[in-house]
Length: 325
Image (cartoon, rainbow, N blue to C red):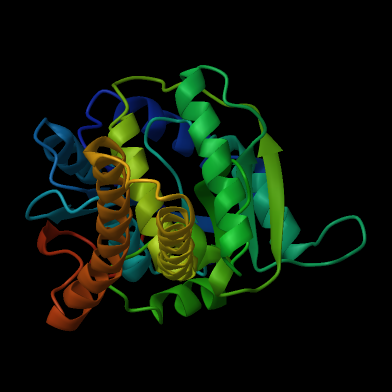
């Protein structure tokens, strides 16, 4: 019997986990999945509520429940990496505990991998994307769409609009991901960078079943910067072009001022215009320095070689088992 590992990053998801556990157990009983074993691998990302206590209780009741608990909050990217590293399955899927990623799609996903689509083509990964953003603030939805447009213009990595981290992967696909040892991780880009045949499933946006989202607008903005700097050097080129353009404009303006003074005796303009020019050029310089700083900081973090996460405790040793009777 092949093993399916369901990796579930958790950060203060005490309210949502009971709903998720009930749903994933129901899916595991699907007729299409009767010949598969499961392990439910929860990664506690330094939660401050009762998430870890609840996971330990579930582990006592069900041998399929595994957990990894961090020493502090390291972020979802670290949690996903830890889950992929600890997962023992022949197939691995990543889902959010809030049920915005519907586990009911798993039987269809494994069908595309093992049986193929209507043409018989088999896939190494089945990924999901939302076809709408119903329930999200309009401003957040607008900037999210713009981010995907920008990324696909400035990066060679294909990142699908509305793509979720929810996907079903073969062991070869997971092993390829684990070969990428970088500290600064942007999984949506890494999934596309490793290649392989990927099938996309679309579904309507689903509201959280319980709890509150951990992603506010500012955190998503910073995450978008991570993606841009991780998979594109175009911002560096833009800063160079901006610097050259300003030099040309300044040189032409200097020629015009000298010509006006020599030909018409026109006096040089006063300090307000000069102040505006100085402020503008200073702003562009600071922007370019900031862009350089972003790339330099990524290099600095990579060179230090710190671990992406630190595990405080876990129960993932040994093989996944069938449920206790």
